[in-house]
Length: 360
Image 1 (cartoon, rainbow, N blue to C red):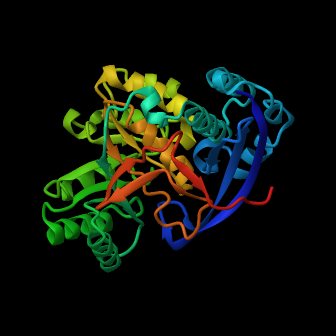
Image 2 (cartoon, rainbow, N blue to C red; image 1 turned 30 degrees about the vertical axis):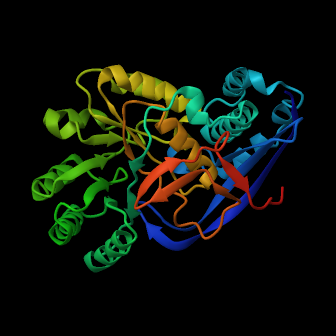
């Protein structure tokens, strides 16, 4: 079955509420979309929202690449060779994970639809469902508790709290959440590279009774070796995020002693499902757990991450709330959420339904 047409376009998706992390405040997100139509009329969908600060690629660059002559030159190629097409794209667009993710996701969706099965079943589904965390940005204690109460009322039982500006204030928020919710809420922390080693040690000391499930990327990229001064049991709950951009870095981070016991895999960092599964394969024999994350993304790429996550036996954590706060999207479907627990649909490919088509 051959590719009939390829179309890329951008669309800004408004957030229902802005949020703050260690280095920025966000109120809307620019997503780049890709449609790959097959000769039989099936349409595979891809999406990307790369963070320039993390991977050095902007959405504008992603769109240019997806509208390039090389990309449109894939028209006429056989979707059954989608692995080869992904390999060729990695050669054409090195260090452009947003571009690669959009193409990889669209090809997987089209191929899954062609086969008539979900992508996760193509790889072998290992996990049926898991709870996802929902994210609370950096804010004062009262606002943190108010947001947490709202999520709790919706059935969510895992919070990821953004930190990284002030270790003492961060600790106060975590302790107050634990006081209010006891053991009824799991609490994760994402410092977004905002701490020094001293800050991290201060945070760990103050919150030692708060049972923080994991701490994501506490120190800036390049300072991984400083983490080796921490006890092994502490490093086991540290998650590599910005430090982990692809399989090559994943391999380095598995060397003993390991600075992180958890890998946060984001399709927008590594370049799509195929590269994500490569990271997962590297992590498994090193006894590193998988934590699947995201940016503010369309349901398209969130569904893709979920399918990849559930094909990996070492997946332990989900943080796939990136579409929850979108005021709009171009698709529905892809996954189901009930009381904070996510699972993919049984639809072919990524199980998506197109709602609208943006302007090129």
